Length: 222
Image (cartoon, rainbow, N blue to C red):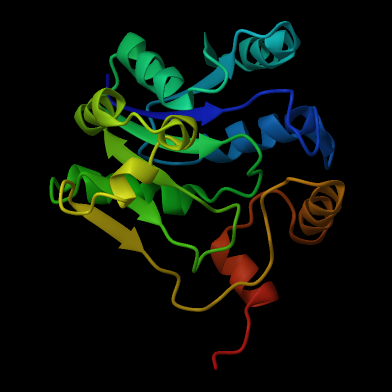
């Protein structure tokens, strides 16, 4: 029950295979994600949603070593993977996180959950005014179930939430904007991204958030 951060992660990334287990400051990337999510005050549990592929056994083993549950499901229909993960865990609120975002900010996680818990919104998301890599999407299980049932486009099945954003008349959507642009890319898709995040951890330590990033990487307002 309660609020679960469900982290999608797999080993066979097209551009940087195995990236979720690559080292960042002495810990695998996925460990960094879990450590940061554990600092969120609103999260009751963390679940890793991975695939049935044999190479994703490593992800399941890592989760078990950290005392974190893992759910294994279909590789390409990520929406179905999220839905059955949340259904099995009897989750009321789902926070969607991707395993290639080792700079995720627990403050933003809490902010989205609090907005959902206000019962004013079906879906709360950070916008691209925040850097790529601070992305948080939060929705109720009922909304996730509705999307799982209604979304048929393969793109919507693979990326989970675009169906909500493309049907604004059907859902109450709250978008959270960053007041000052931050230009640095914080998700990891390439070796260059990985080296950038490593340097950020080296420079700012383990517990930085978007405010520390703002001080370091904010762009002038036009």
